[in-house]
Length: 86
Image (cartoon, rainbow, N blue to C red; front, side, top):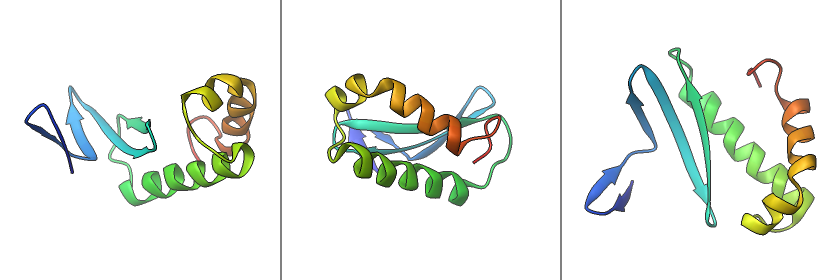
């Protein structure tokens, strides 16, 4: 758990009927949002695999590599997801 401004932020939290799941790598937050009772292990596995793939393509993941490779990231996500399902 991370401590931000004296508030503990958990990697899974629910707000207004939505469940947020996130992990941080470097200075980037990777987040998934769902309305349903999704398998959190599957979601985190997907997020960690996404980070591995991005590292393989860009060597380094930071805000500049995300901005510079936006089109490639979009295409990778399009190949990895089918209507929101990994």
